[in-house]
Length: 176
Image (cartoon, rainbow, N blue to C red):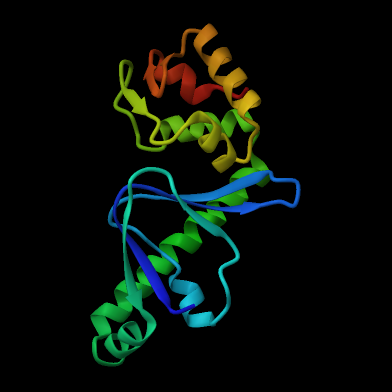
């Protein structure tokens, strides 16, 4: 690996592709966020593919420049470590979620992750429902069924990628 990338604008999905063509989205990277740092230190090839989801500009930061800056700038080294630590923490939370939470609970957790203020709060899905389902380790059909169920029980409304929370307390208590 010859460096890492920063998303200037657009979105990049990181994911695995099975021999059968099934895709598992690991992460969706937006503007200001980076990917590939850990591999730069490990000198291993990428194990996930990176695909732009929209018109995207990436900034490639070369390994030599990074290593040179690490030698002379402790603050830069701390920021690199903090970024990789955040990603590791996020991946560990994903493992916990996949292992200990039902699919319904993962969807509700996603809808509540930014601490909506109350009834009437809106969540805009930043990617398609299919990609989000993969990110949550669910099939698109199951994802749609849960949204339909939540909507049928009067907890949310769904209009394309815009989800309005109608009853936040019931949504928080939902066990699926």
